[in-house]
Amino acid sequence: MTTFLEVVFWISFGLIFFTHLGYPAVLWVLVALGRGHGSGRVRPPTQAFPGAATEESERPELPLVSVIVAAYDEEEVIASKVGNARQLDYPEELVEVIVASDGSSDGTVAAAEAAGADLVLDLLREGKAAAQDAAVARARGEILVFSDANSAWEPDALRELIEPFGDPRVSYVCGQVTFTGPDGGNLEGAYWAWEMKVRRLESDLAGVTAGNGAIYAVRRSSYIPLGATGSHDLSFPAAFARHGELSLYRPEARATEQVVPSLEGELKRKRRMMVGLWDILIGERLADLRGYGVAYGFEMFSHRLLRYATPLLHLFLFVANALLLGDGTFYVVTFALQVLFVVTGLLGRWIPFLPFRIARYYLMTTTSIALGLWDRARQGSPGTWEKAEGTR
Image (tube, rainbow, N blue to C red):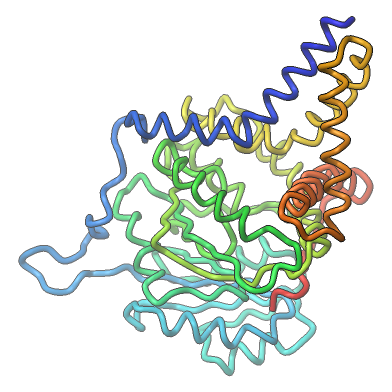
């Protein structure tokens, strides 16, 4: 029995350590060894979009893009978002701005129309994915560009975002999002700074395993309508990988968003997101690694499946450690360290010292995964979405 418990202890500890620290290190080594994209890397940034200018011509032939913003009760920021899209460094006649209002009960529709959106859809409330699908059905662009209503893009972000589509293997590109504003103890901005570094390595190896809602684009011919629980961020990179298509990270395409001003608010946001996660993992076969190439399958297992299994791994680690307390001083120390970490995280609400804040952020974000599964089991699949409080 002791041997079995020791195996559970060390496997749980090893997998938790690997997904958070070991995986990025292995990615760095593989990329440094030139193991990216199998038969060859994506065209370098200087390669233009197909049909772009050559030495014989003067002006690049850029594609028509549709900038799609799905919005729910975004009266406060939607005009600013439309204005931001209009001010991007891209030919105005090649930018179509579409706002899809998912049953907004405020003045979102009127504000978007007044701000000059090319098309405003006043839809019944059926969820974000349904609103995006409705917008795509009316869009004219060769490249479909998506953004949150509260995201602000830098002027050159659109040009940078679509540049990788010059490679016909590329179907999805996400940009870099930076979170601004007072965090109120929420370390989401710091987490995303680290996450962007990991995604850059993934992009260089086999493609990203997830994007972000602030700034991303999809090739029109690759777009897949999703169900109510679908998420472009998770569903698209995995689905495209199954067809041998690439999903890349473009750090030069930059956007900013307001951070959720409290960790409690962040926990609520992540908990809502995690409710639909389980439908994506099972229903869309995200967890079935057989459909991916070796490198991308390694990424999915390490960055997604292990990450989402972290609450269960922590539970295994804690229980096995508790049952091993009589087997020596080592297990007494490791158990005490686990208890100390939890206590540190709980005290982080009142003690602003950085180690306490880190422990609290990790504790609450890891808990959100388990809470999302609990909500899914009790309430079923989510049909709607909410905006995060304090980010507008």
